[in-house]
Amino acid sequence: MRLSYRMHTPADEPALIQFWCEHSGWDQVSAEQWAHRLLRPPFGAAGIALATDEQGTIVGQFAFIPVRVAVGAHDIGAMRPFAPIVAPSARRVMLSSPLQHPVVSMYRHALKALRESGIRLLYTIPDPRWVRLFKLFPMLQVGSFPLWSVALPLAASLPISPDYAVSPLVAYDERVERLWAVARHLHSCQLVRNTQFLPWKIGSGDYQVLAVERGGELVGLVAGRQKGDQQWLICDMLAADEDALRVTLAAAVNSGHGEALAAPPGRPIRKAAVLATPLIERAARPLGFQRDQYDFPMIVHLLDHALPKEQFAPERWYVSAND
Image (cartoon, rainbow, N blue to C red; front, side):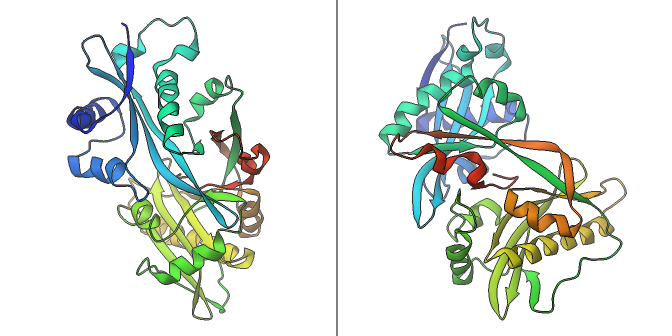
């Protein structure tokens, strides 16, 4: 099979939705769900690289979702590669090198369009099975973050200082925006998680989002949901400082504890888990977390050579398990 590569156009969208439903292995999507994920992200519509066969039929797709990366006081235009999918017929193509894999070819084809649109970097938390391939490319920075977890249900809920109050988040309002303005400085690099982005990322579906207040001010926010191997997965966290981070993490564990107690026998929750940056690890240890048997790989690709490589090294980032 001889493959050709191009970027998608609006006319491709019905075929892309059908292709996703038939070949992604993740879920079935409606036109509205597809539009929410890929056509209406907060920072612009995704670009989608396509692989087509000799008849022009789509046999591969690789989306690139616009995001922004916070570095100190500045935001940088970036893309998150998302959901590379290849049809079984294209997977069977004989290749003389893994660098000719359709996913690699779609990625390379997209780079020119992304550079021309002003995108300065790409980042992704890929399936670990892709890491060996990524390591063949010297321009990619490859790192990893460990999963840390604590067994659920707890003997008792973790204590929360009376200086703090925890409740469900009611609205993504100016209080969240003020928290983001402070929380962005806890790590050197991270996704912009403001009131434009968070409602799209965690504002719907099965996330439980908590607000942590201190003295009437919002100082913490955290999302959690049941995910995968009988776990309560702790995702996007914002915190004003390290003490607020520890309390926010404790609140997330207590939320998972409550869900574990209420879980039906056929769908138990046996642990609360979090992707642990060094800063989160310091907060997690006193709460009973231990190193789990999983690592999240991270890939950073700088398209703008003026960006200092060491400033964007994976170990300097905050990423969450749902990034």
